[in-house]
Length: 124
Image 1 (cartoon, helix red, strand yellow):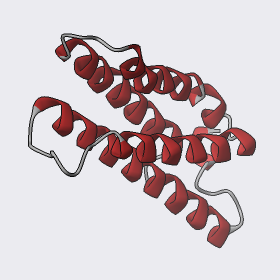
Image 2: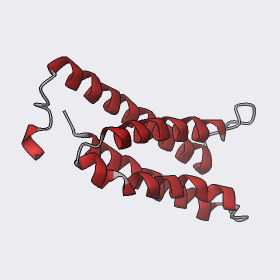
Image 3: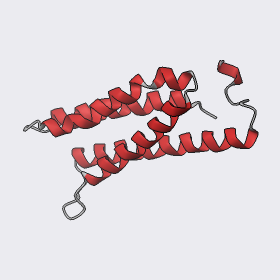
């Protein structure tokens, strides 16, 4: 299984890159479009603590990632949905966050079932 800090890094980079693409693709360039790249930077800053197996940071990152996915999916208007660049990028960012949360929860469940931290033995 892939470690949570690897998934967090990948998800944060996706949020930063796709969020900036959405920001620069819009000719108006609203400041609200920079929220997702900013949250990606916050998630990227937590990678070091995830690598050190800080439980509080792990749970905070999981909750923040789930919140980001809900916020990203809420920005899509279902009445006027069409497959343009903005909606495609928002869908990719939301799916990336949901997949990251699924990996976080799967790692947590697997660790609880083993009860001996063998998941993290290879990188300690």
